[in-house]
Structures are given as structure tokens and as C-alpha cells.
Image 1: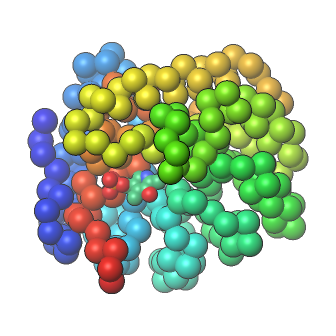
Image 2: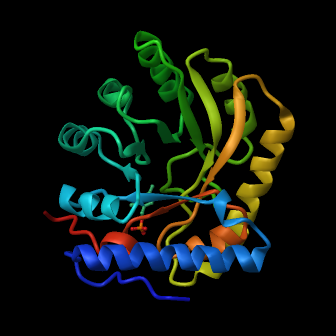
Length: 244
Ligand SMILES: *Cc1c(COP(=O)(O)O)cnc(C)c1O
């Protein structure tokens, strides 16, 4: 595996380009190992707390999908760069902020309550659009994490799928922070099993095509276990400075 450059906060355009190339190579290798087609996996480049110059560098290298965590940051970057690229909301979303992003993002990864989904329904209806969302699942049952529990997920999908302006496009999880990605394999496997169950349920308004799992520390294992979308930030853009 080619290591991704994660040290240092300000990577050059060349380093970002090299990281993207290595990330793709590593995904290809994980796919080869798991007998999967690399075309099944999309990279969502997580650009939170990174400047638009870094996003431009990634775009020059062909990366056209970015994930952001903070509403204000999406709005600012959207105003600067517009579309393309495509923008995904991946972070915890407060109901009162849905209105700022509803017409800017093409997917919300982080739907973690029925009340948030109801708010998305309301705002999407105003804009006469159907918003694809992923249900965030707290697959490891961590106390500190947002998301539906494993046992709540199917019922939540049923209720959200019934909302006319929201489409359930799959599931997302943030696995526990770990130094050893292997310890997350079981969680990825469990989420894939839940995803297959969701697909088999054939619920109205629920068309699972996206399984969003795997970050810088564990994307290889996530791909081996069936991820279709990895959310990689540090491994593309370098370390983030949360204090800025
Ligand atoms: C920040 C973040 C990522 C990216 O994390 P890295 O470890 O930097 O790759 C992925 N998903 C979510 C929800 C995040 O908040």
C-alpha cells in the first residue's frame, strides 16, 4: 500500500494530487483483494477546515466530489466555487440550518433523527426537489455518537422513505476512532449486513445504492467489507487545525 501523506497541515497541490493517486491505487488493491470492481467506490474528499485552494488543487487532479461538516463553511465554499464540484453534507446537521444547504448539496450523509428528516422534507418541498439522504447508523453503539441504532434503522427508513421529498439512498457510519483499522472490520461488516437487509425490504422511497463508510484510518478495511463511498479528509489534504 502506498502511504498517504497525512503529516503537516498545509500540503502543496502536488502532494494533494499524489495523495489522491495513492488513495485510488489503495482502493484498487483493496478491491482486487475483495473481488470487487473499483468502479463501485466513490471518493468523497472531506475538505472541512481546508481552504478553497486545496479544493481547486484536488479538482485539477480530477476530484469532483467534496464532503463538508459545517453549514457555514459549505455556504462560503459554494459561493466561491459554485458547482461543479458536487457538495455533500457529512456532519451533524441542526434542523434550523437545513434551509441554508438544501439547494447546494446533492446528498446529506448524516440524517440521524426523524425530526431532521421532517425538516429536510419541508425545505425540499419548498424548493420542489427530492433530496437523497443516508441514514447515519451508530453501528458500534457508542454513547458519544449521533445516529440511529441498528434496531431503529429499518423503521426509520420506512418513515423517512414515505416523505415525498426525501429519498433514502443508503446508510452511513463513522466507525470508532482506532489506531488499528482491523478492529473496525466487524462494524463495517455489520453495517453492510444492515444495508443488505434494508435493500431486501423493498420499502417505498428507499433505494439503497450508497454505503458510506471508511475514513483515512480505515478506508481499506471498509472497502474490503463493501463500502461504496469512502470519506477521506486527512489522507488527501493533510492534518486539520481545529483551533484556527
Ligand atoms: C472529518 C470527517 C471525515 C474525514 O476524516 P479523516 O480521518 O480526516 O479522513 C469523514 N467523515 C466524517 C463524518 C467526518 O466528520
